[in-house]
Length: 257
Image (cartoon, rainbow, N blue to C red; front, side, top):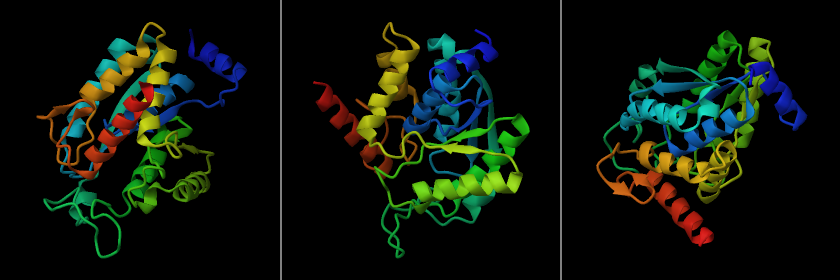
């Protein structure tokens, strides 16, 4: 199926007409689910990651593994999956005194926000994503931010995303859509969404295949732990990211019984 035919087919079933999507792709559960969402909707999809001096730098290596596994397991998606980009944002890590960029315990800061909050991170990411999308001729920017499993990050709020969409569209004189597929669902529903997307892509067991891919190859743990393998994937099991992922997995599996 050509990209033109694919676009006409999506229009016929009510999907929005866009030239293509750029997915902010960290290599974690959420961004991998968002990537699957984009591959199910858009004729051309590219990915973007950021190296900002994060403690869990192993996620940068896992990005490549996840992309390779997606191409191998889902041929229909492989035909739509284009270039991957990584931007060096080391300066962000150097000016950020946070638990994601320094060796410190995870706790609430005096501001009341988790000290894993990297001020301005998503705002900077979306600005650079907009610049890249402009050059690449992509008009949808997909990000896995979420208010439901809310960690206290103000740059994950729906209002923030709407404001950034408007700012990018005005500032670049091009209409962008900032799409947030996970904004109103929790981690259990995110696991279910991944299962459903995989099933749609490959009715012969693709739902479980995509879930297994996410469990085995994605990385969420803030401490970068790939040594400990849990039912829900690799991680320390104690950091905030692992706790959310594990709790969502448990709720999803309990509901499926």
